[in-house]
Image (tube, rainbow, N blue to C red; front, side):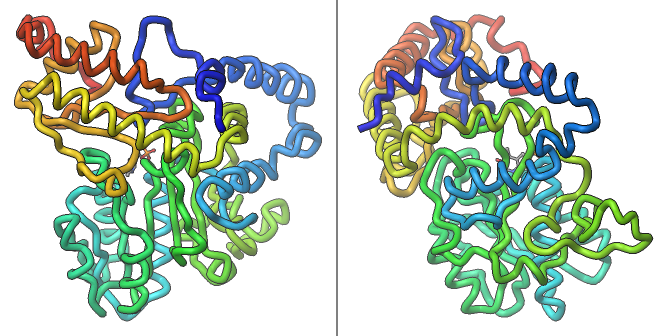
Length: 397
Ligand SMILES: *Cc1c(COP(=O)(O)O)cnc(C)c1O
């Protein structure tokens, strides 16, 4: 049994705050600052450039990747860190297209996060070979998979609704049609169990500042199925993905394995903060976290529906069809969320009308859930959100 009050105590969350936005930016661990300080003072400050060797900096993208791999059902050596998720999406899709040179369709869904779609649009323009990006409604993906599809690119958990795709089935269907399957795990990694190897996913990517608590702009990860890793094109041919970066050869030659997906110099400070955050995942299995997450999200739905009929559930009601977030709809979502935040409950909104709440099982308690639902109900009942100050728009929602 995991002691969730103990894992919660490891996080730095201001008192009086119910934090339900760890699906967008996870909080720091209490010892993240000290661990990061150590890297700045001792490694960077003490060793200077020698640290690339003496502190193992050059191997960090693979070593931290191995720790992520354990959380997403991937074998050692198959995951490497670097860049941000947008870049990794580009690389994975480019690699997938190179594996199916005779096909021209990239299939995705309308629930995908815009940057994934934008990156593909840019890739298509760059390649200039008649590719098309086809987006269908999430529930229509399976029927849209046919032998014109080169790459099926999906985000497992929808950022707005929390709806979860069936990775195993869709990957199987894609493979049966001869397509390459690319999965984005932005809202999966650290939140729900993922079985990349068992599902035979070809590529997977994800960020580490959401449920993995790596900090703002923390490095992304990319998974390449081991049997593809020595043949996959890297999509971006940077020197850190070269077979021999310090040979300074004039021509690009990809490294063996997933290392070829590296691009430039690794973000050592970002990786250090992420490593500090990953320690807490040693104390619970992803199955235990999933069970807790379902308990939290189910309770929230129950409490909100009982007390706040003004909002409408936008997430799947069936626990096994959603990730670790719950969304409700209301035409005045923005003002309601601002009022909630002013009363210590931090969630966020997604245009036009979605109130979004993330339930990170490591630090959100059942008490938090009850309190958040009660405050939301109170704000709705009292029309408190109608105060004009809650309608002032900020840049980041
Ligand atoms: C959060 C998120 C991103 C963000 O990409 P960055 O390059 O890290 O800004 C991309 N895709 C999905 C599906 C996301 O949820």
